[in-house]
Image (cartoon, rainbow, N blue to C red; front, side, top):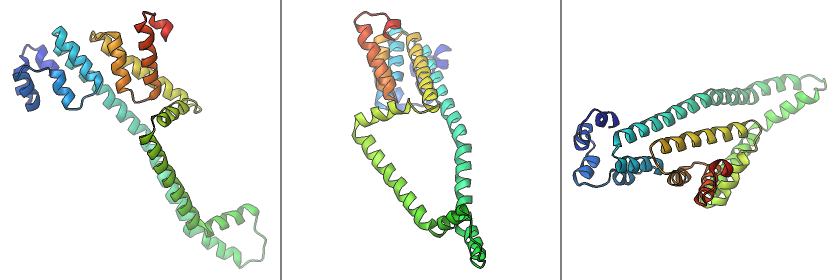
Length: 239
């Protein structure tokens, strides 16, 4: 849409060309484009850029900026999927191999050892014990993990305070916590810069980012900055 508008086509012609009937109806009725996108479930970040584009008459730039933002999000998700795919496959194979060893291999060795009168080393004895009770152990572990996940999801959906505590606790994890914190702040800074480049007022930009934040740390950061900037304080001191 942004490129077609930049080429000189009218907004109505662009909507017809792209076959977006819901957007064509909105434009033909003279209604706000941002309102049409809001009804389609777009986030506050996108809506703020569209509103600014409408008020400044730079819708082409607004749509191009939205396109860049969404492309970066898609690329980030793809990178995360690639990063987690290999460890997940390795873990799955490891579980399968371990199950095979304890379920079929170790019992065969246990039969061989049972025919001899030699005293088994402590470690070998423990491995055989685990093999003998493997089904019970795996069932117990499976039920424990399942019940923990169900309990976690229940508290996560019901209690905002629980979500906030988990988000902040993740910051203190060794290595991962620091990486996660830097990634969140980097993404937040990029989004804030995109809104400011699109001429969205900084207070509106912070409100938008706080509403669309996927982490309570970023939400609280935006709320903190909004309070201080509203009082006329400098942003560097507020940060």
